[in-house]
Image (cartoon, rainbow, N blue to C red; front, side):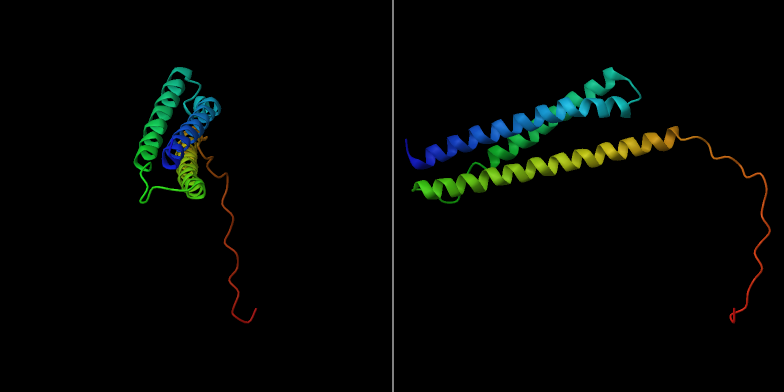
Length: 138
């Protein structure tokens, strides 16, 4: 087995493992938040949760496939480890970016829900007289 083939296989295994771990974590822990956002409609929350995870996997596996190619194939073990580290690091950055983007979208959905469900403001009982105007000298 050549060094570059080992690096490619290690990249694929590590990247898929990380992506599946993050996807399962998001799916499991995001459910409660989505149930809250969708007003206790668990069927809708589960459906959206599943669709988000599918999209997450498609984007990340697509990125991993596109990022598989390297400009110059590693010929030594040191080059293979450096290339592998660079590629896995990029996958981790993409996974983190996807995570924070999802959190941003969820927080926007939740904020909108809270604004819609907020109580109507109460009209004031009375009006206060205006404060006397003071001159510039105090």
